Length: 357
Image 1 (cartoon, rainbow, N blue to C red):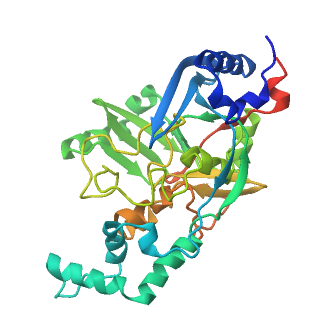
Image 2 (cartoon, one colour):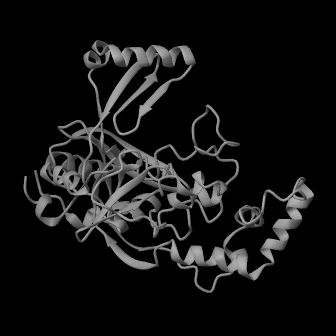
Image 3 (cartoon, rainbow, N blue to C red):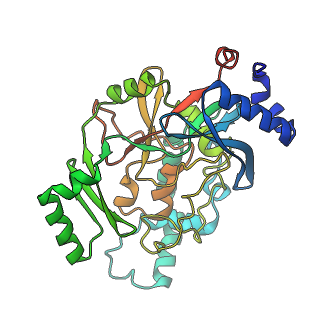
């Protein structure tokens, strides 16, 4: 088999290839990295699309190919007024959190609308919103993103699945499950110990094992994988979008979003679908992904639910899923928080790797 021409793995060259040529290229990638080619597929979301392939590794992990690109990442709010960034509906929602909801006079829609208008005329309030935007999003930078094989779904860090035998043979576990069924509960969590959950009528269990960031990273690299960098993750989540979210600057209030009480339903959540690269990514602010840059670990894709849990509502609550959000308040220690921390494996496609068959 001829070696892969690395330049064809980057935009715009990749996009200019015919479907047949893309299939040949994607098949060569499978052979080079000893992956099972599951299917060819075009993924589309937010008016962006990519024709790619889904693979399975020998350890059962699904990957997709993501072409490289030279792209501007980050977002610059400098010299932009809030009304130039957001529509009125979103501005009202941003200002709502500054209302004192315990005041007796705020009791009807007209009074709320009046108070919101007053807040949006308050320069101090506007400064606080602008300051948040300027300090919680990465700055614009031209970046080269090399071609990647990317794990399609993020993985848990500290929870490992119990065997069915272990779950069934433990009498204490069975008592807990029986009580949960009587109480109409389908999930039981004992903090950083065990988790039981019901799915399609069956009960499953997981055990918690504490891990450090370095232990996780060593395990990933020992198996031939890497963690994405901040900028790689931004590209995977936004494909170079020039807005806060891949779909624009404004939240769409017709979206069905997890953790937003007045939107929650039993239907599919709007963001929990494959994106334009075929990835499940940036879909839940409670689930933050670990990224790695020059010996430093940090998070992308969530804040562990801090904004939502703090009662800040839909827009503030979902800012953390923006490709460009950076959590400046979170201090990274040595130990992973398995309830909120997740990771995604990547394989960087380089000149050396594509020429060794």
